[in-house]
Length: 363
Image (cartoon, rainbow, N blue to C red; front, side, top):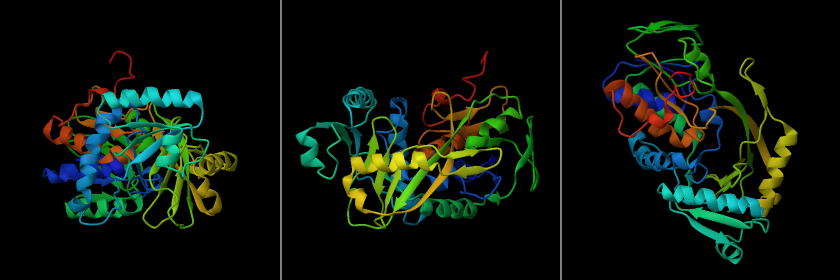
């Protein structure tokens, strides 16, 4: 089996296949765990997911809670709850509507406003007019997970090939992949290359629309407890958390500058200022802290913000798992499901919603 892409989806897919006794080669265009998986803010949020993804996020949490034991190391996995906030009345109405849809799909949510917010979360700013709380939000460390996953797949017998930029991909009874690191054939190929997945799928005639986000994240100096729970925003424009080393991470999808063609990822400082100002309004305690570093990373996005997961149309031996909003959270589950599909022909959870061919005419 060949897995193209060494991020969250790819490593968990390779691990699942190896656990089932498959001979697996994992190929990455650069280095394993170098792109979106390594530069995201580590949120394991449920409230910031589309309602349709809530059951999958809760199923993913079941895997996250056993992952430290499975990999034999600390990953800073914390399921300590979180607030999703609104700062205008329009946002408050949106918050209420989305929370109702999420509750209908199994998420535990409580609704707060006014004095309830001040009493329960006095560290939130006065600009917060409404909030929802869920005990199911949390976070983990991408910095710790990447090396641990790599060790696990290599210990499981997976061959890891880095700096293997794909030149061509040919389908058939035994798909063939030609890369800058050599040519490979296998019984099946899994495309798990994030924002590059659409380009790879096109090599075998599959149209998988993917647009590129260049998300920015900032980290502050270490500080006393400032953000006791993770915080997200009704409009999806803010993620806040304080991690184990007591630094604070500030994200929310504010866009940097970059393209896939030249591998450029740069900070847009005008946008970054807006991100930081909103963060300080929502949590005033951040105003006293210095930002020590900001960075940008790619995220591939589908037209409906749902991942691609399944067999490519007309290609019995070529599969894809990529481009989930919140792919870090969903990665353990999505990788397991893709590995199950390839190895067993069936999955333990339904995946019809994620059909890679859903945007192809006539499919």
